[in-house]
Length: 164
Image (cartoon, rainbow, N blue to C red; front, side):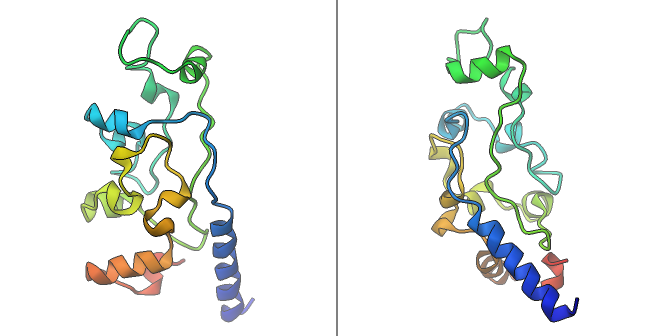
């Protein structure tokens, strides 16, 4: 496969990845705002966001230190209690997946560059449901947004910095 064909194939893969990321109904209506009000940091649930390439999706063990039957506060929603009692992971639906040819590191953006989660994910602290693709600022996440930010912050826009 020639270089041009690979580029076109990569571009098409990227478009198909974007098209498949519509607003998805999550199994639990997670209220980000309530958790932020309790001074919880994003990395309390999204392990890896600060020190790894990928930010993790919350595991049930992230919920259980606070949400237990023997604790009156915080009130545990029945749908969450079902997963806790069954010791079963919540089947969160992945909201965004970068195309395979794109390299994105949360660590590089959060720990190294010091970018706040809200910069890309919007006003999470006021959200009363799980984050979804349409919640990205301007309803999109993608190369245009990344390039704009890289230019504004005077960071490399060399294609090979993010594309493999």
